[in-house]
Image (cartoon, rainbow, N blue to C red; front, side, top):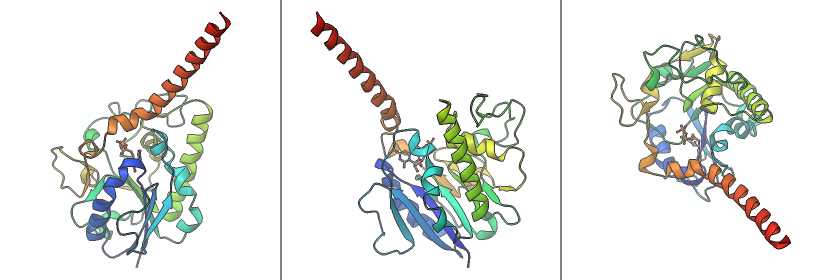
Length: 264
Ligand code: UDP
């Protein structure tokens, strides 16, 4: 039986998605594999963690947006040694929900190394329309005219060694960007799109496996990406980092004014 590690982050309010994620993946996802869930969270207790020994909860402090998503490879590589025991590793966004049976034959990479899913929004479009990172200073940069697919950051994985190698390279690229003061346009998604350019060792599915809630399409709904805004205040979560930075500068200005007034 295949051993599969599922990597899942739910810090802060994102923990609300864990119950439906877990129940739906237990019911539908890779029914003939032994699935282990690595849940990186700051929640005190998560659904079923006491009963199910395949749930491995690991404390993760909440990070500001976009580090909460961008730093995922750094976070996962913290358990690199433990992950070596698995045949496959998959990352799933917190708001994924399996909607129908997803067999090993249809989802595992087979004779390829990695598994990726095209983004529905760019299906049937040309690569000039893809929102790749076009900033040459970023390690996620893709020149115009290159690239076959625009893949989604929310569902991906592969054979263990191949996915560990991907994570190591992207962790390195993200560190380089940070050192150079760069931030890839769509964070981890831009980096993973850059990673697959020029490779042929990945299996690509259809947008059925990353199906945004509320969208019409010809594809069956296999993995639903739930509309977060129905459950959590997405905008305020994503503005938190910006607000913190503004508060910091405002305090600096206030301190300066106090000093000037004091001097007067
Ligand atoms: N995430 C989290 N806590 C946060 C923000 C993000 O756990 O405060 C994780 C979660 O796994 C989420 C992923 O980062 O699915 C990507 O974030 P989000 O879905 O908001 O990004 P989007 O896919 O909308 O760009």
